[in-house]
Length: 214
Image (cartoon, rainbow, N blue to C red):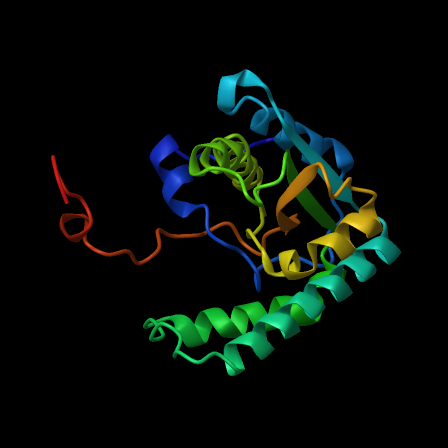
């Protein structure tokens, strides 16, 4: 498939979390997703053990069930936030816009042509910080590479973790061995409406980069 003409820096700085600009009407050939995953599998990972797995879902009824679990997780998080004893972090400047985007995804998730669940072997519960960092470090680079590969082919996605409030339900639906495998997130995949994404607003590097000590 023909790729967008993007430099490495442009690809890295314009791969956004895409929700409202996902094209719900355009189908995706399985070979395109598989091509992006082959790119992702070249990512570095702990001891080169390659402990990742990917469940790719294009069946409409299964996607609808996944979306229902995702919405249940969103409801759980909303209820927890409403009853929290301490106030949440003050909203950022673009928070209302982001929440509107998340709300759109909530309504349309079942219509996204492909949903991907990334997993990594092992469970974090009770594990040492070293073990947890190694586990996440063995799947997160691959997930980011997957999103970059999508972007280069005029597709988009966003990293969603809402359904992890009901991770066991998703495991049961997709046949994922819950006791042995951790889900890192779910990724709605679609062609994007337009490809003119720009770098996001970020804090000045001088405020976040520290040399030699904090």
